[in-house]
Length: 166
Image 1 (tube, rainbow, N blue to C red):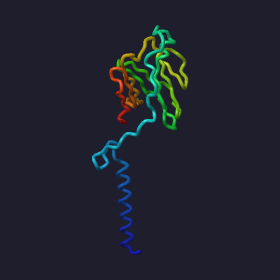
Image 2: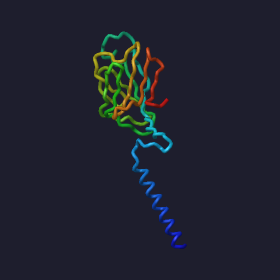
Image 3: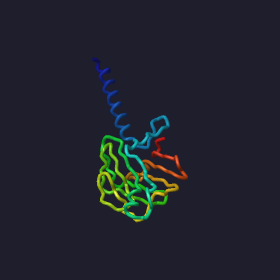
Image 4: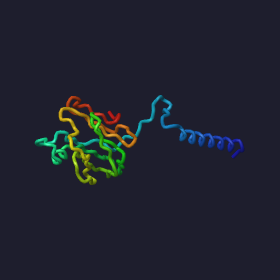
């Protein structure tokens, strides 16, 4: 192989390496050269079923309060740490998840009343109902405050937002 051919291959290899290092150093908000920003990865965690109307007589008993709940579902294979995630309603009531690792393909129910937290059930420890029977919105946010999923009913019925996934 000639010296000039070897030099060209060496230069080409260095240029390619520089391009890879430069691409890796680009900020996450950079576009792809076509005016498109990269999409944030979709979360495997979403809202599941919501029991916003406690069955039976709403007598503010702990049993009645705990019959009002929202499910949070992990549809992915890997576990997700929910510490710092929040679940809130339209009125600003907010529940912040503590130490809860949601296993893959599993569900946790967030009850309104008092109880002992487990892997499958956690409790907001409230004495008042949270979810409005005539209309409300449940919003799930990750530890960075970004909306992961939301579900509304009543006056906004049918309005579902999957954190930008339409």
